Length: 225
Length: 207
Image 1 (cartoon, rainbow over the protein chains, first blue to last red):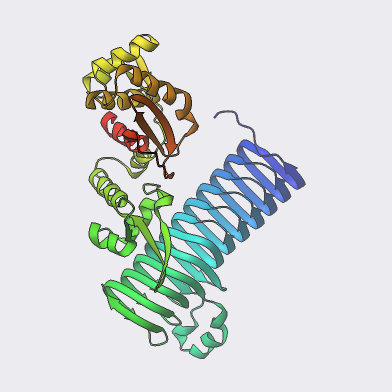
Image 2: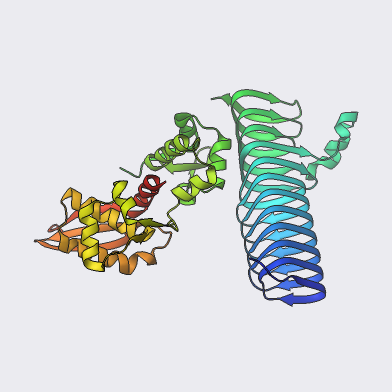
């Protein structure tokens, strides 16, 4: 593993992928094959055609990845499009992300919006919704979904309903141990403890220990199992 | 039927695990992706599992997780071969392969002090069959040949060995797990061995 070279693109360029120590892309780049590296940093725009396996990934700007992503730590500021599936031990995403496959993480924090066609599976999931988000299924142990903005604390509820409409999460099912939701539309929510903040529309909630619901949320049916 | 399904909810109740644990194990690949079967029910999409397999797997995980880390556990439960070689003496000492089977192998392939995991797996399988008395040495040779020639094609995929006999003539084949297979009446399936399960068994014995 020693003496691996670095890859650096400044300006406009493309490379064929391969094994590197660190990869830096500033400007606009394209990687045509699989990328295996320790650090991957992208500032600007990048189009990665293969799979990515890296220790640390940081993306500032706009990028699209056609394959799978696997990393220990991942940070995204901006917009990212992943066609494959995604695994990271620790991921923080500020901006928008779309993942066509499954999304797996031990710790996942998203501020912004996301779209996930598969299963969103994270041990600890923190979502702050800035725009409308979508996931097929969500599972994990601690799941917190909040609408960004603290206007409701100051009693400006009307503002929430005026602006909060688009800031919602739509999903089929959410399953976890500790669940807190705001502005979420789901068919089924299952968990040990479930707390619903404002703006939720849930068809069925099943809980083991406790269930709380805000008066601005609707739950068609809830039962203790 | 071995294809009986259990819903996720029933599973959690039965095994006393939480959603968090189930999803964690899924992330670590302790539970194979293909066991998650999506089906439509009146409450929408639900996930089901092959009942026997999943309960067995969860008991295994629960029993072993105190002793080794989840990542190591994932290695053990995966159908991948381990990249180790074992000493001949160790095999005998830990009762993994009997002396007769080892001698049988030595006869065919010559003596060697060390064996690859793959070879050990084949010997382990043969040993089982010899012990049960289902096959004789000549047939053992046939099985060893097919394994050495074709097993590598299955790589991490599941693989079943079928050993057949028709009117005293024996034959064998390797199939991947999903296939349904039927034979005419005169052909008897003498042995059906799931090699993936065998790998798991063997890994536990070695560790």
